[in-house]
Amino acid sequence: MSCAPLASGSSRFDLGVWRGLDDIRDKITVPVGRVLRIASSGSSGTSLRLRVNWLYRPEEAEGGRKSFYGQQELLASDHIDDGIPIASALGCCRVHALQQYMQLRDEGKLTDADFYSRYLYKSDARTFEPEMVPVHCLCELPFNPEKPMSQCSACGEWYHHECLLQQYGPSSLPAATAAAIADPQQQQLQQQHQQLQQHESSWMCPLCSRALHDTQQQQQQQQQQQLEVQSAMGSAVTQHAQQAWPQDLWPAVK
Ligand SMILES: [Zn+2]
Ligand SMILES: [Zn+2]
Image 1 (tube, helix red, strand yellow):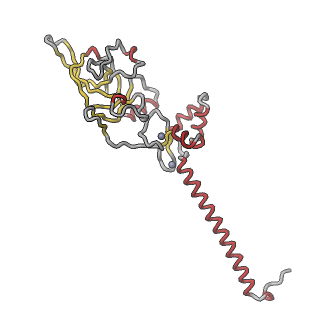
Image 2: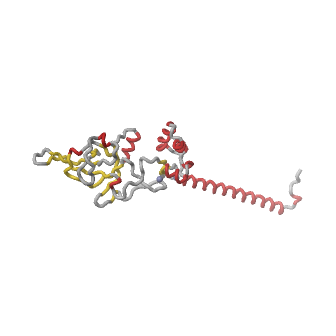
Image 3: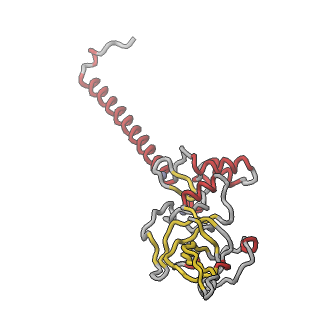
């Protein structure tokens, strides 16, 4: 989707007129809208006006900004305004699907004018679509591309590193990730850290680690009990045999 950041005159988006893209680079509240149509208006027909479908900042939607929203996340909306002066269009930006945005991020191709959108906000009803979204981790929140996660090789669930740290401490993290977090000055480890977000194949989440540990302990206990039972049975059979057979029939010990 190709979009234009706009400073419109409508009350909701009344942020004044920016002088240019350089001026807005540090201001993350500049409105973003998708230009649906450009039409001429006025008696002479020389004034160009835009029909714009706005994308909302999470702060502007019901419930405000939550921890799973990324800084560059926008909400597609059903809010359309007509008659926006073309002079209020500041330039072009790009709004991607989340997967495409992450691919560009991994390739180092993102700019300040790159955004992503995954939810639709119905501005009048103040509801979201879809109503149900996949959630992950101990925090049971949707994915946030700015928060590093690891996938458990046993259960397949994704966990935020910060949630693992808070709940279970550094030992619960994949080893190289823990090392990179502990010493972020080491660039090599940082690079490993980034790669490991995608290529951890042997890490197990604390819940699966604990389940595996419990299972191994149970197996050890069962094996120990079996050995004890076998040993006791062997001893009983020997005693029984010794009692059943007359002592003089046993081979003489030399
Ligand atoms: Zn979490
Ligand atoms: Zn697991």
